[in-house]
Image (cartoon, rainbow, N blue to C red; front, side):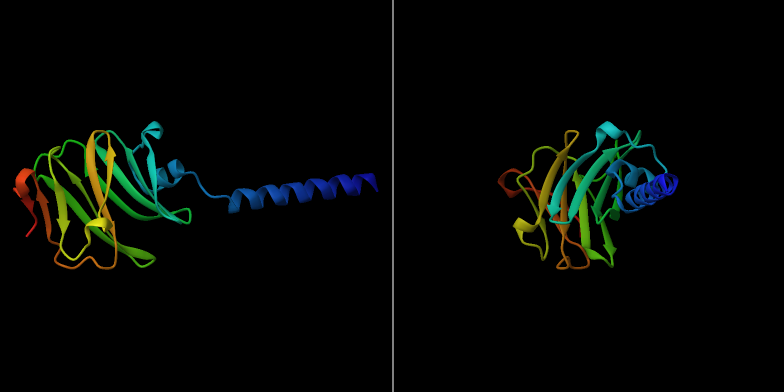
Length: 164
C-alpha cells in the first residue's frame, strides 16, 4: 500500500510539474530570442506597460535595436532599427496584426525637437520612450490613416522632417 501511495504521489507531482512548465508564461528574454536570429543582450531589455495586457520592450543586439510589443506571452509586433542609422531624421515603421491595433513606431535621430505630428492622431496618443540615449515614439491605434503623414517640428515650429 505504501508503494502505491509513493508511486501515485510521484506521478501526480510529475504531471503537475509538466503542466506548470507548459502553462507558465515565457520570460521576455526567451520570447524575444525565439523570435529573432540575433543574439539579444539580456541586460539591455527595457520594458514599459502600454496597456493592461501589453508591454513595449526594447532590447539590443550587436547592430540593431529591437522593439517588440508583447501581450499574452507572445510577440504581437516586432520591429528592428539599425543602431547606427545614417539617413532620415525620423526612421519609422508601420505594422498590422489581426490580434491588436496597428502600430506606428519610430526613432527620432535629433535631440532638439519641439513636437511630433502624425496626421489623424491626437497628440496625447503619441507616446515617447527614451532608450540608450535615443528618442522613440509609438502609436497603437486603429485611427492611423494611410498614407502615413508625419511631421517633426523644431524650435519656433521649424519643419525638421516630413514624411510625405
